[in-house]
Amino acid sequence: MTGDRAGDYRILHEAALRDYLAGVADLKALLGGDPASWAITEVGDGNLNLVFIVKGARGGIAVKQALPYVRLVGESWPLPLSRAHYEYLALSRQAELAPGLVPALLHHNEKLALTVMELLEPHIIMRKGLVAAAQYPRFADDITTFMARTLFFTSDLALSAAEKKEGIAAFAGNHALCKITEDLIFTDPYRIAEQNRWTAPYLDGLAASLRDDLELHVAISRLKLKFMASPEALLHGDLHTGSIMVTDGQTRVIDPEFAFYGPMGFDVGAVLANLLMAYFASAGHERTLGERQAFEAWVLETIEKVWTGFARKFLDLWRAGAEGDAYPRSLFPGETGAARLEAERQAYMQRLFADAIGFAAAKIIRRIFGLAHNIDFELIEDPRKRALSEARAVRLARAMMVETGTFRTIADVTVAARKLRDWQPELTG
Image 1: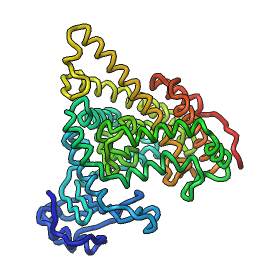
Image 2 (image 1 turned 30 degrees about the vertical axis):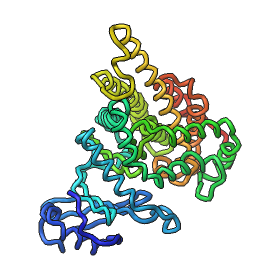
Image 3 (image 1 turned 60 degrees about the horizontal axis):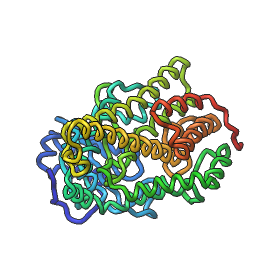
């Protein structure tokens, strides 16, 4: 349901939000009871938006409203409200392609930059669960289904050239959010930037080394160019463990406001990066030896399952009669042609894997030296322990980005991570 009953944009705090929801018949009925009795709680802990949970006598909803600025920074960093429109478009498309893996959309008001979705309960933000050493047995299967289907079916492998270009055009206006990524992930951590921060003084030397590392600068610049110039598929654009809500048996992907057409490896790499950060952060948290060993083993196993499961499902979709304008079957007749096409599929996936490894590295480095950090590391109370975990993650990230070709399989990544688990770097402080 899409509404346009509001006039000009205004920020809806509790009283105004209550009045607004009471005026939308379907939402009022879903919540039930007297609107005055609805419990409204602002729960947004992200960097950009207001998020409310609203509960009535009959049910609950989640309400998200974009602010005209970056919430993490304030009004000094304005941001277009149109991102709510792109998020709504992305959620709608993802719901078609990966049903049951995104929250149900209940209402959207473009003028207010407001979207109402199903209330996900008892789901929690996955990152919070990982900090508590929780394991999620359904996650790998669910996230690989989500990525395989949303990426494949919005690519040239599944679409005609015209359909693909229409998709690109629909999201082309979301360039302000892309600009955030281009700066915060691919540029700022490698130079002096006002909003950079890290675990000082322990990582001062490492931060300086990043700024002097020209091989790393070449590698990150190549990734930035691919991000800007390779519209391979519709990306979520911010697929980290803070954008995933989970229970033991369910996974829901949320917050695709950074959605645009870009390189597939960016989404896959984001998931891998956040699992790797959870792995390295584990050593800094207060856990029993048994808890730590069990959690870290599960994380490494999940990292491997994420890539292998994604690759298998993506290839299965491609083999199942894809009719996109790329790789037309008429060019690969007979058994010889089919064998050659299969070899090309494998080569395609190897290139995608290399992209994912590089983008994962970029994601790790930005979360340690850029503006927005992960609680995986931030909740390690002892700054020296935090810096140790972060330095290990950066050591792996640099290798993944500069020496990408040495990582031929996902097992190469997990083996390297395991070797660095107890490495003792030299810290500045």
